[in-house]
Image (tube, rainbow over all chains, first blue to last red):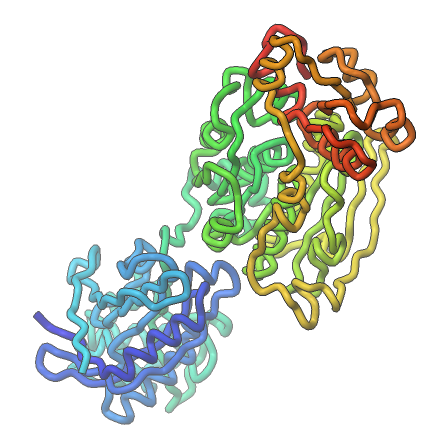
Length: 141
Length: 470
């Protein structure tokens, strides 16, 4: 099974970002490289949640910000591997909304935040039929 | 030559390249030439109609082509097209566009330019918490559900009583005895099956309030008592959510929107301290015109809908007063109090407190009381304590326990008519006014004075169902 390998310090960054944003959802991008069937995250960038309403339940990324990140990342021979986002007081499982908006290839780490405290996090990839997710192991390094 | 930046998920269809060059004098031509060279990329970014998919953004330089000329936007030589996936998601139900059934149901909203499809979708994704499913909660729930609010939470601990039906129009005669939350849920679901109802059975307290309220966009105060009203206010200020306030008494009502995040005051700015217990009678004690909560509740519903839509001028910083007998609306300007302990510049309240205590109700609990069962037993044994009824004459005429009638307001002038050494039991309808009277009498040297718990209402429901009640 393939895994997404994330340094402990970056996992803590994800947790503190998600806790700081509570009760709203937050989102960030994960950058790194692929090695065989695994992928290694080397940096994170916190993104702005563009939503003006229902921010407790939704996030939307600014496409132009993402376009610039894609461009800079490609120029450094790195990849945008995916995104993390928080589910305040919801489980770390993809919702129908997450499925509706999911893209192939990207890893989607969902960080559950229960009562302000980071709880479970899990990583998900869109299946080839684009109708479901499969779970990818998060390996701390 | 046009450079097209390919996002990571689609690079595998372009041999791993982050950028490919195509030709074309417009965005449409460039995308067509990209799709011809890389059919899989074409499928991902263009729908069957040949237009870019909703989940794909195309930028020419820094501009979204939707805000330029779309596919007809001219592409100068050497310009760069950015293909960017829409990244979105979130917990909970799908963002969901309106279904054809919903379009039909809400068509009279949708043709309003201020609402439209977008506004109706905001209502669908919106959520409100109704604290109380009584007089105010009834019209609120009915109209908010009919209007298409996606999720309505209802907190109530009471069961439907015959005396509620005169104004609590969400409940029917056949609902008497049922839990108000469940009765309201059934009615909402028959009005609008698209509205999700979450019920919170039991009292809304400092322990559960934050957990319940945090999952809703708007808090609506439909309470009938001061502890819960201050609790609703404090919860909304601490969670930074708007609190749509309404209250009713006899023929008069008031409404406002408290939202310190928008510069307005909170309930504590208006009323820093609760009145002493028993001073302001409840609807059960003071009476209320049945129609009044309909009017005030619908003012609250209107404000809630406007908040969700982001339209119109809200009652922030304004207290709307309604007088049904005079048929007049008046408006008072309200200002945020910079010294407010909750929303002021240097707040001292950072978490929920004990609201019973804050409203003096625990202190009142220390007053000596007697239950209706004990009183009945003593009467049966022939040792009847002296009974004082502090209700009004017209209430006395409906039903009484043969006590001496001195309405609460006359106690300070007439207490000399009572013997301070005699054992006295004071009662009213529910126990609120009589508690006030007991407190007064104790302060004036009465040694053996007690409050009848639950008032004549408790007597009626537990001792003598045969007597008239109101």
